[in-house]
Amino acid sequence: MNHRRVVVTGLGIIAPNAHGIQNFEKALRQGKSGIRFLPHLEKLQFGCRVGGIPDNLDQISKEYFPTDILNVLNESMRYAGIAALDAWTDAGLNIPLPDDDQVNWDSGAIVGTGIGGADTLGIIIPKVNEGRARRLGSAVVEQTMSSSVSARLSGFLALGNQVTTNSSACSTGTEAVIMGYERIREGKADKMLCGGAEGSSPYIWAGFDAMRVLNTGKNDAPEQASRPMSATAGGFIPGAGSGILLLESLDSAQQRGARIYGEILGGAVNSGGQRNGGSMSAPNGEGVQRCIRTALHNSGIGTGDVDVINGHLTATMADPLELANWAAALERAPDDLPYIHSTKSLVGHCLGAAGGIECVASLLEVYKGFIHGSINCEDLHEKIQPYEKRVVHHTIEKDFKTLIKASFGFGDVNSCVVFQKYEG
Amino acid sequence: MEEKDIFEKVIEILKPYVRETEDLKTATKETDILNDLKVNSSRLVDIILAIEDEFDIEVSDDEADEVQTIGDTVSLIAGKI
Image 1 (cartoon, rainbow over the protein chains, first blue to last red):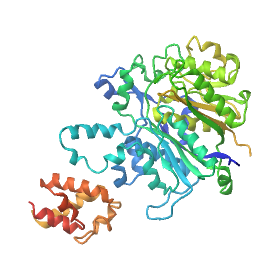
Image 2: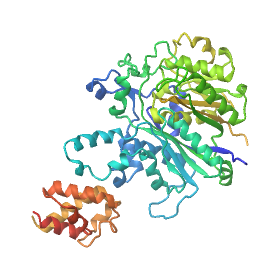
Image 3: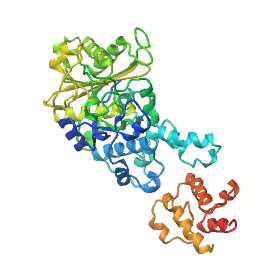
């Protein structure tokens, strides 16, 4: 079977530290943190009272959606819509008019979410409990169905190919990119919008606070709170937003003379089976390593061909294990590991959106030739110190060829994708 | 309340649900809510809820099903207040 080559021609981002590709690139290069103190979390007595929420969502939304649509979009749907529309136009494509009946049968979307419309559930639950179910209004189904973050995109862009939502916890966004890649590679679509979106509802974040996996020690220093790879990491910082990529067959991109950010060489998704130390909330190291190796195999490259790792690296006790898994899977000594960094140090852990946001960062790095600094890890964890030379603390301007990006999630699920500079 | 006042309140209620608020400026009693104002049919439920709250009335599902034009809406409300 002849597989088609797949490239990325559009990027859309609304993240805690920036909205829009140019602003996001600047934020990455400058090491700008999007983590802020959130008074409502203090009022709600959360242990962790900082988080990453994109600025000015209401104002931005008005620029993207007509009032009748905006009124029925909850937070995660807005993020997904903004990032998807941005990715589409960034790729040089026109947004169709609502009255234009032409459908883009070869274009689709796989946009995932970890938890979805919890903000809407917060409205539904008390009303139902009060016996007022019939006064919920008409929009709560479209806002709480798992596919809420992808379903609207079909209407915005007249998408006629597969439009769906995947969900694999914090692996979601990267998994969506791999699923879209496979669909185009197999000739089932020409263009796919892929990534993830997640809202900032306290109803989402409360469960993680209850699990004691959030950093509660930096409420007074928000920008220092997200500390992947640090000896004083203390847990992750929750974030929200959306990152979406427009994947396209190379043929289609070339035919219309599109700008190409990079090529997707291949990817892999798997699960560790919750064995050998793996569980609902911890990874089986063998599963992680197999996922990385399979991604390399599917990409047709060797362990020595990887230049940069954009890690999952959340700032929990799993970070040292992740470094060890990368070294083992890539068969590289600690001081010979590819450059490694964590986008979560800047935006927090955006859960179902994390993979999408971090894939957007990765493509920008591949295309523009830089590796952004991973902040707040001056004090590396002792088990990460052997990798010291390979941890990127400050942004490096460097043309490189190959970046590997992985995301891992509850359920012991893994996803790994390989991006390469497009050189014809 | 005069029909004219009810009409104006209905126009105000419809604002968040129409695609182009400009269309409301030329709306008459004959204006069809779904076809002329391009209101999504699902949103009729929300419009009825807003009318119930605004005029402190109750509208049955059967009555709501009969509403097509702004005039229908005004008449329905006028018959209940």
